[in-house]
Each structure stands twice: as C-alpha cells, then as structure tokens.
Length: 358
Image (cartoon, rainbow, N blue to C red):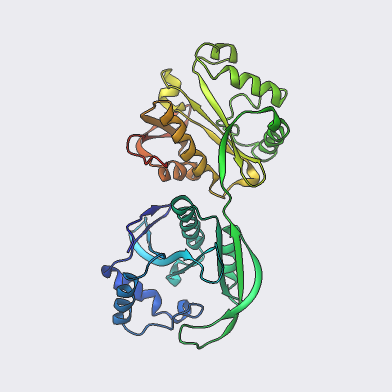
C-alpha cells in the first residue's frame, strides 16, 4: 500500500488503514450510497476488514481515504490507477457518506487525485463512468475536465444489477513557464482584456503581471519587463528590485493560461512585509483547472535556481483558492498582517525541503 498524502482546501487524502473500518462501514452499509457502486450493500464490518486486507495486495492502483479537515472525520474514499480498458488512460472512482453529498467534496478529491497522477507519474489522460441515472457524478466528471464519449454497461461485481452507464474521458493539460516573447503579443493583450472584463471589481486583478494594466501595448510591456530582469537596468523599468516575468503557456495549443513573476529578493520593506517573492494571475477562462498550483510549483524551481532558500508568498485572507495553492506547494503559515484595512496572510516555502520536482 502506498504512503502518499495529498492536502486540498477542505480534505486530506491519505492511505486507508485497518482503523478506518468503522468509518468506512457507515457509507458502504448505506443502500443509497451502494446503489450506484460496483459493490453490494455491506452487512457487516468484517466485510470492510476483508476489503482493507485486499487493498494491501493491490499494485498500480492508489486508494485514498478522504478526511474532512474541519472535524478530522473520514467521510469517503476513492482510487485512481491505470484503466485496463483504455490504453494510456487512468481511471478513477469515489464514494462518500450520504450526509456529505452536495458539498463539492467529490470534485475536490477527484481533481486532487488527477493532479497527483499527473505530477507523480506523468499521466495526462483520464477516464471514468457512472450509471446513467447518477447525474451528480456526471457533473463531477465535467467539472474535472472530462467529457462524455459513449454509453456502456454497468454491473455489480457479482454480475447483478445491470444498468446503462455513461463513459467519460478527458485530458489534464500540462503547462510550462516561458520567458516573454513578441510572438505572444496578441495573446498577452487578449489576456489583459479578459482580466479587465472579468475582474473589474478586484483590487488585485493584475497580481503578478507587473505594469500590464498601465501599458499601451503588449510590446511596451515586454520591453519594460525585460528592463526589470537585472540589477543594472531595473530602475529604467520603474522598479528597484530585479524580477523575472513568465508566461504560463499550455503545451497543447500554446495558449497563455497565466502570468507569474519572480522577484530576485525582497529587501524593500513593502516586499518583505506583504509583497513577497512572487505574484500570479490565471486567465479567467482557464481558472479552476489547477493551473495556479502548477505555475507556483514551476516558479519554485526558478527561485531555487536563483539561490533563493526561503520564498515568501502572500495572499488576501479572503482568497481561499490562492491560499490553497500556496499550501499545496509546501507553504507554511507564519502570521497575518493588516495592510490598509486588508488582512494579508504570510506563508514561507522552504526551498531546501520542497522536493526538486516541486
């Protein structure tokens, strides 16, 4: 059995163990939960023990228990691993206690498992299916980027209860951070307009984008950002601290999905107090796809290459998505501070402890 642990905004995904028997029995013994699962309703806790014993012998499939952070309760379980019916795809499944339905836990856990498979094993193609009547699971798969491809046949492990199923496939797109280039000028300007159109009410709508909102063209912005790359020319670019600006580009279609910067140091009080080493923005149409987490992960690598050992990353107290992005990349909370009426949370990422892949 594996030893991987994944943390999301509300959940901890960890290996199942024998002590989980009673908690698991709460949902596998519920007829409503078991209705659309491959197992029949459990009638004794001994059946759970047998299943947990079986999991210890399973290879190439990663089973997780889903623990709710709020009360440390195990509320569901799921797994991800190679799909025997689709070459190159990994399939996933999940089940939750009935009182935890409708809160988005399935989507949150599934996205985390997909990201885990992508980061640890380079998996980008995913598949799953659900009984046609189970519309809620279809919504989960769509939120995770999968799309309907075909109808299939569902049946219990013992061959009973056959029903039509809906099969889904999807791809978790990979990205890379690239230096500013003129060839991206048009898309940079489209990115800028999309931010303006969708984030008009946000005070930090261009976080990590430097002076993009103040420039008259993408070409002007690229020129200024390049001036900011070195200590010798950063003053000409309107700043006292050298920084690097990167475009987060999706490999499959060369589309910009985000922008992120990296300051070489945070000596000025503003940066050392609440600005931090990096800021980032994700294109509105590309949000909720895990890109922010991957952007920060890749930028940690850049920071390490610059010789930065401790990276300060901050976020507004109300920006839970950004906070989770930081935590998922190893951020350790230090303290909250108030800046002009806004509560800012300070996190440190120890680059000597974060893995080289991070």
